[in-house]
Image 1 (cartoon, one colour):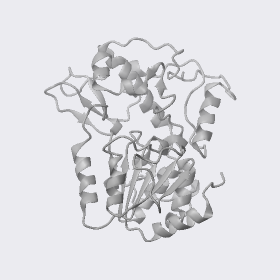
Image 2: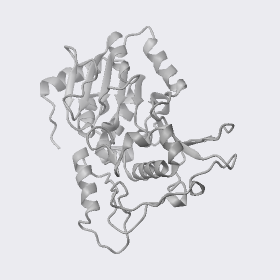
Image 3: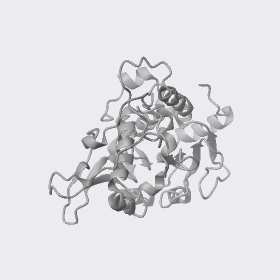
Image 4: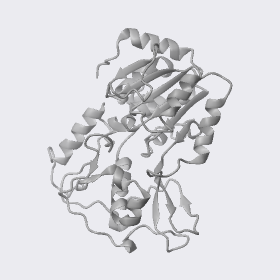
Amino acid sequence: MASSIKPADLESFQNHLRYSDRILALCGAGLSAASGLPTFRGAGGLWRSYDAVSLATPEAFANDPGRVWQFYSYRRHMALQAQPNPAHYALAKLARRKKDFLTLSQNVDGLSERAGHQASKLHRLHGSLFDVKCTAFYCQHAESNNFTDPIAPALAIPKGGPSPAPLGTAASGAGATDSMQHAMHGAGSKHREEKELDISDDRVELPELDTKDLPHCPECGSGLLRPGVVWFGEMLPEKVINKIDAFIEEPKKIDLILVIGTSAQVYPAAGYIDEARAKGARVAVINMDKADTGRGGLDKGDWFFEGDAGVLVPELLKSEIGDISIANRKAGDGENGT
C-alpha cells in the first residue's frame, strides 16, 4: 500500500527521531486493527447485542460470569488466531535500537509480546487476556501466559459455519477486516469441515452457562477464575504506573511521544501526553480519525499522520529500524527480542 505521508512531514519527523534519545509510545486498539482484531470502542462497539464496555466491569462478572467469560474467551481465541502486524514489529525493533524507549500499551491482546517487544520496555496498562486470577476473597492465585484455548470446555467456539478468524497476511486494518468478512460469508470455503461460528453475531445462539462450567481456581478449588484485565472502575496496576512515573520524572527531557491508534481521552493514559510535552516532547499522532488528537490537541511542531498504523508506523520508523518485511521478521529478532 502506498504511503499517504507527505514527504515534508516524513522528513521533519525522521530528522527529529534521529536525534531523539528518550521516547514514549502510547498505544491503543488501533495498533492491532491491521491484525484483524475489533476495537470494541466507539461507533459499533458491540459484541452481540451488548455494549462491550458493559461486559468489562466487576459488576457484570458478578451478575453473569458466564456471559462475561464467553466474551473474553472469544477475545482470547481471536487474539491467538491473529498475527502481529508490521507496526508491532516496528515498535519492537525500535525498542531494541533505542535504549530509553518505553511503550505504554492499553491493549490486552498479547500481539506486542509475540512480535518480540522487550518486556522491560513494554508496560501493559490494562493487563492481559492471557492472565487469570482467582476471585475468592482469601485466595491469591494468579497465572500469567495462560494460552489454553478454550480455557474451559464449555467456552469452546461452536462450529457449523464459516470461520471469523483474522488473516495475518492482510497489509492493513481495512484489508484484515475484508478478509474476515470474506471468511465469515463463506466465499471460497470448501465446506469439507465445519467452521467456527462467529459468536459476536447475536444471531448465533449461545447457551446459558452454569457456574460449574466456568474456569475454577486450581489452587483453592472453589473460586472462579476471572480474566486478568483491568475492568472499568478498577485501579491500574500499581507497579506499572510507578515504573512509568519514574521514567517521566527523570531529570532528563523526553524528546518524543508517539500516540498510536488511541483516542487518548481516558485518564491516566491521556495525561501521559501532557506530561511528556511538559518534559519537552514533541507529539506524533498516528490514527485513522482526524479528531483523535488527544484531549490537549496538537501544538505547533507536532505531527498528525492519518491512516492505518500497520502501514504508517513502519514507514515513519524506517530510517531508524530499516525495512519491516516478512522475510526480516522471520529471519530477524526472536520471540525474546534479543
